[in-house]
Length: 288
Image 1 (cartoon, rainbow, N blue to C red):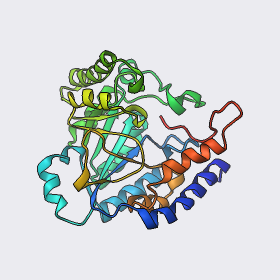
Image 2: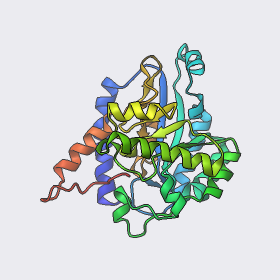
Image 3: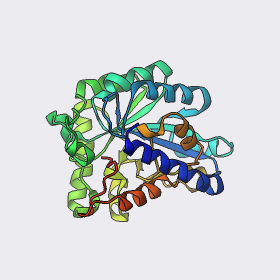
Image 4: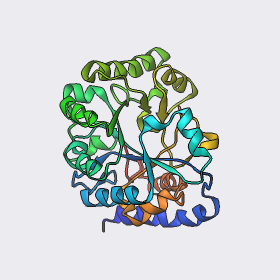
């Protein structure tokens, strides 16, 4: 086991007592975020295919899995009367491995999923160069529009937007945010003939102003963090997600579904600061 993976698992273990005491027990929607499957790298956001398949098999057998399209007032009002969580599967960026490795698994287990696409990279067929991808020995390629169309036509995959250039929207003017958000929606409409209803904030980061602009274009929007969305307190333009990582394996994945690791992102950041280099750059995993 790599030392970085061992450290990440120690962080997860440290979070469990916190989760036992303070985990979110109210029923709600658990939104899982994936990035890559089958890339065969050491990146924590790159899951082996067999692990991903085992996770999807577990969801099919033990959970009620929904599409992001199901997050409307009527369906959630009906579910809120119950006591069980709903689970949604999402992918950020649009890595080509989603088509090659994740999509066949989704089909096998009939798991609906949402793809949030950084549209410029797909248009230009440019390898991803933001976040942790920038330092990767081999930068991953994006999906093609033909692959996205094929997945969407099954009715199992929903297409959402992730801006055009994958930029931190908090750092842009209102006009630039409008351009990024609106352009990503228009590109998807032009290339696929569908109007996306769902959006993912790059790096999960947002402000109230950014949220308002996104709300002009989309029905739902997902943010970063590691939390559940209780039915009784759900903000559809600031939905929490739980990142699924290679270091989760299968055991931590199940604990994550049960809200036992909701403090993980805080402790990961704390560990990153403690391990920071002299220049102040964390040596831990950086997600796109």
